[in-house]
Length: 230
Length: 385
Image (tube, rainbow over all chains, first blue to last red; front, side, top):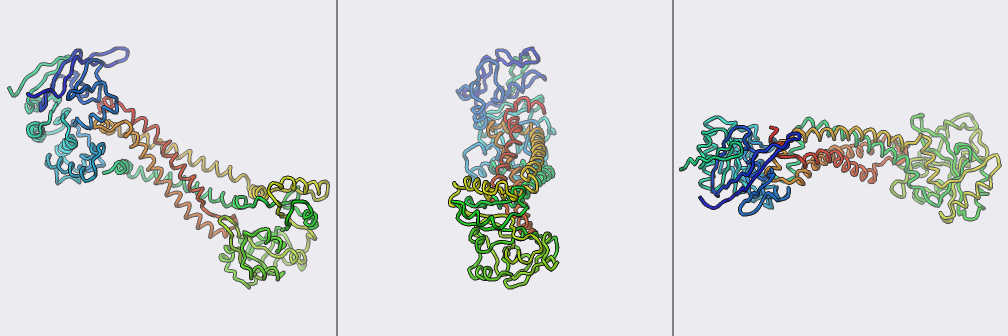
């Protein structure tokens, strides 16, 4: 596989619970190469979502360093992290998290409001992103007028519209039936294979994990790896 | 989509709530605008008063008379350029509900003292030349359909004529127009000499003196001199600037400013709580969405602007509609009142204060929820779902 996109070194993460400090990870190392599609599995409370939050720069490690594309991101300020996320990371959530009052196109356009792109360029990008997920004909529909699968596709379009290097997916098919889940996972595979997006996906579902190139099992703050493509 | 459109879409996502809150703001600003218009009207006399005009009244109360002889004595005080006098008539037209500010004046000196009451030269000459004539404000002429040459009966609820009747008939000789914005010409004036000769009591007394000084700097000295001149007489005087006199006249109704402040304060206090509570509720409901926005790259500053923008937009819609309604109401009230309460106008100052309150309301009600949204912990908020 190609060079590393993300490198985690000696990551420790502890949460305060009352007066106690509860460790989630200690001395965790991890490397995610470019164009990787990694599924992260593990029992509840193993730290999957915490890991995803650290990779996405919405949480900070208690210790250790995180390098993204050769640059440290764990020491950035809040505003720098926000700008970093807007430019480099697309998020896909289990419950889609679309804005109910906005149309599909407007939801997809949201991350572009943070850029210096003009209205025409934004419209073009939104059009392309919706075409990639096969929802060109649903651009004007509100989330409430779309099925769960369609809403998740809008969420994927929102995640890729700013052309990020990394897509972070938190149980992206957890709220979908098997058939629709297959479509969504197939779409993520396409984004990884054809557009070169690096994808890290947290899932409980072994079937979903099969769509990834490799599966990392997280338990008690340690990884064990299973390469499905091997 | 623009940032503003995002704010607008957020505001109108719960239409009924937004409409009801907007209506509450609308009512508060309409009350403010209408009461401010009333206050402006009551203060219009004081606001347009000339700095070099003084008013001499009976010291006990300005409703009590004083001898007309005081006019010639006051004219001898150094620094006094011109003296005139007026008498309250207590008039109405046809029915008591058609109350009129009616004054018996010394025509020549009075019109010289008040150049802001504009009369065409021919009408002025006609008025000065006919003791039985009257000049009327243009608003009243319009309201009662008075035209030049009309004979109009004016009744008094204070005076009686020597023949026992309470009605004086006058010929309309002139229609006054204001010389500048805010000048109140909604009154009628007629010859004091004619009034004195036909009234059944009052003799050689007048209501008050008006005088012009050589300079406003001389006002205090001249006031002291005049009041000292009549000290210990049966008709002691009190001399004030015209502005102070007009203000005291308005305050007969009570401290209108304070009453208005109380009413407007209560309205805005209530609206502050309503809108503040609505905004807090709104942000609490959107905790997850705000967390998502922050996750996809919205900075804390942009989240702050989104929430503050929403509260400002809400306050602006309700507030501007309320001020607009007050403006429309002021036009209607001016027509209905016929100027009996002064110049009923929605002033630019009222509009500016209103806009200031809109901004303050928007900022105050949005500040706390905006700070809350800005400091929202994304991990906690997303984990709550």
